[in-house]
Length: 93
Length: 287
Image (cartoon, rainbow over all chains, first blue to last red; front, side, top):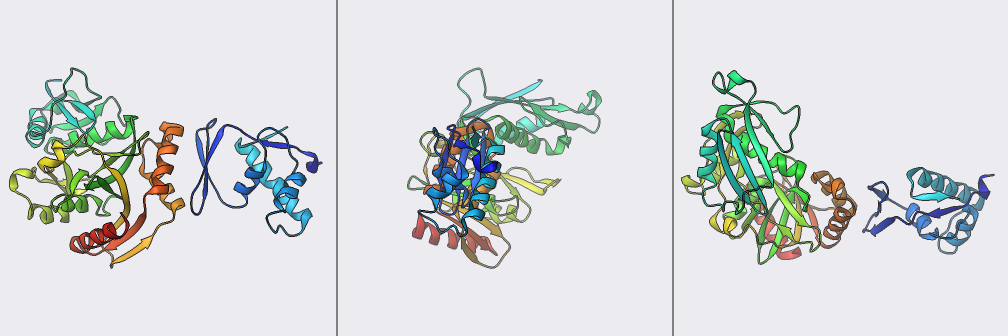
């Protein structure tokens, strides 16, 4: 069940917010990532220590953003988390 | 090597060895006003070697090598020996320099603030820097700008200015003949002639400046000025840097600080005079 997967942010990265884009330097890989919405918002909502599920992140994000239909929004958040996990920026518990 | 010359350009020192006298003699004349390295050691060694033993004498053909080399670098004729030495020094900087973030950009300074110009070969950044260097600005460099990783200051690398094709006559008309090197015809980039920077550019080669304006010049188009978003500026500058990846987080910190604090514009211009007028106006408005 993907809804049960829990994630946390990799500590070893430093972000820089520019006018039109957010940059993330990942120390472990030495790579610089250029991110646009909603990725910076998802990373912001993710804790470095405690683990969160996509549904928990959705609950946090919908306080500030209009995310539309919840089931679809949670699936999209999960997909972003999986992509970020593949890059090493997010860790799965 | 049979012939040797040591040079200091900005913060870097070079020892250039050559199997032939001619390239080093030309280099020594053009770099006459530059300081010589104080110690025995140099940051980089450049070697101009024959491609094969006989090619030292018979249709002499130069292979550029040194501390850092490119395996597939094309050999050059002895007539282009001066260019080979310059290319060799550039190659060492591009591949080996780690003390600053190296940007493939020209830069000039006024009142302690620097104008940085970056773009492809042929964009006009070298010619524009050379022209500004004759009109009240201090030339900091036509090829590489060095960004200090800690202070964010821009440091000069005022080697000879490499003028190409149409730019040669434009600059030659403005400067005394003794500041122009020999004409190197039919190189891979067409005709090339080197310009010796003015005395103040050499005397102040250790004096940095705060970057205050970034331009992306484009020669050969109708006059136009466009803002460039910070994301695009960042991406283009990582492409213009040869050591961004190697410097890791220090490079990331230096470059993001530059992008956040230095206003940027893309400028198109049909002539040098148009470009200079645009630069002076943008400098007044933004720097």
